Image 1 (cartoon, rainbow, N blue to C red):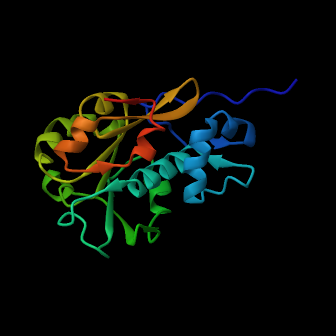
Image 2 (cartoon, rainbow, N blue to C red):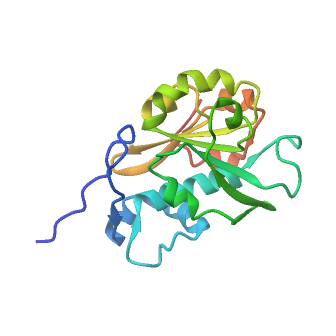
Length: 198
């Protein structure tokens, strides 16, 4: 009797180490997750890929289907993908460095504080950033930063897009009010894949 893969850990508790996912576990992500990950070239043809790789693929595709104001992301300028030091996804996000998104080369950097976070185009936050988020959110007011949370609390407290786990599948929710405040346009193609849009 073969054992079934264990479900993903809760999104609000960063895992200690990335899980290796076999093809059966990948199938549990559902078609939407596989399509998003495949667009990023996360190696789904191979037998194993980590949960972190799949989440990084979501982040990549979130950026593909988001439009920034011209002054926030001028034509040909690098797309600044940010994560604070110690972020569990940092290694997987680093693999996106130098990839192209709509004519913009991805650059991964670590913002030092709220002021420098305003220069990010995409800011990825996880459970370690909960305390930081309370001061960071007002500092980002008016800045065109696509905030992506891999944490239940931050996701419910104003992040534009929030990854979560639902019945062992990685899904995401969209907050259009937060997107409007950041002057971001999210493609309807992406929104159709969201678990919820508010």
